Each structure stands twice: as structure tokens, then as C-alpha cells.
Image 1 (cartoon, helix red, strand yellow):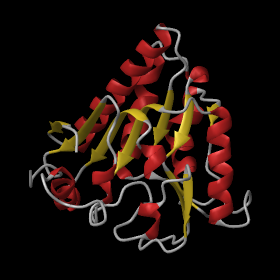
Image 2 (cartoon, rainbow, N blue to C red):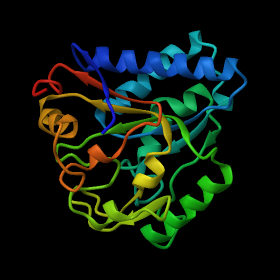
Image 3 (spheres, one colour):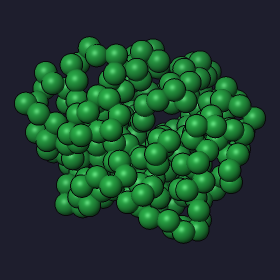
Length: 240
């Protein structure tokens, strides 16, 4: 593994504000240079807190959200209006409020016959509209060490010839999901892992340990081309 930078914040709210501020600063700098940034979002409790902070801070920033391309690292293959959808959470928390228009949601059950077909369609969309890499990719980590919807011991960990893969047997409900593969996740300039709470501390320690396997801790399999940053609160960092 390449060297990771670790930022530890006192608590989840402080962590969320720091991440939101850093994201806005990166987007401002990219747009000031004439670049159209592409970012990848994740779901989960701390991600939602970050998203709400982005919405709060954006009005006083110079970010033109109409010129930010938004993707998702994984998604639950459910109905489009399901509360389980990461995209729905992100839209409610900040995307709609800030005026993001280039938002590429992963297919729902209304868009594809099954998760595998949805994964194929999302891969085609990324090839057509993506820049080939993310400027910033935000990811969570599960208590079991999973990243996106790539779970320990699952066959999807070995898929390296596709952008996205259908997951049919997620140990976390709902069982059917679409996830970017390692091949796609590792095409990010900057990877940001977000983790808060003691329930994540063991997985964080395993992901950052000097030894270990991707099969046991999939989060070990993702690093940024330029940098990998772990944004943690004190509880998530407790076992480091």
C-alpha cells in the first residue's frame, strides 16, 4: 500500500465540516484553473453529514455546481424512490440544493432488468461521459472492511475487466447492489475514506495495518493516484 495521510478530528460534526470545506476548496481550485472536476460520492451516516455541510458552505463559495460531474461508488439496486438509494440521500442532502445538474445515478430497478445489466449500463455511461478518472473519490468503510459494495471474500473482488459489477448477495440489506470495481475505484487522483464511530475502528485499523489482505479487508484495495486521505474522528481512530 502507498502511504496514506490520516486526519483525526474530535467528533463526527467536526469531521464533516472539515471534509466539506476541503472538498469545496478542491473544487474551487479546479474550476479556477479551467478544469471541470469529476467527483465520486458514497453513502452512509457520515457521508450524509458531509453532504449537509457542503450544502451549508456552498453559498459562500465560488463553486459552480453546474460544472461539477457527479458519480457514485456504489448503489442499492432498488426502486428509484427507495430511501435506501445513495443518490436519493445525496440529492436531498445537497445536490438539488446547490444546483448540481451533471449527476450520473446508478440504475435502479426501473432502469435495468437486474443488477448485472445495471452495472453494464453504468460502465457504458462512465466511458461516454467520464474523464477517465475522479478528481476526488469519497468512500466509506464498513465494520467488516468492505468498500463501496465490495465485500470480504466475494467474487466481485476479483473483477478487473469491468467498470462496475452487479452484487447479488450483499451481507448487508438490501442484497442486490451495483458497485464500481477496483479497476474503476483506483482511477482516482485523490481517494478520501470517511469513517466515524467506534464501530469502524477495527476495520480502519485493519485497512491501515502493515499486513493484511484485500480479500479480508477490501478497503485495502483502493488508493489514490496522487493521495489517499483517511478522515476519521477520535472513535474511528481509536485502534490505530
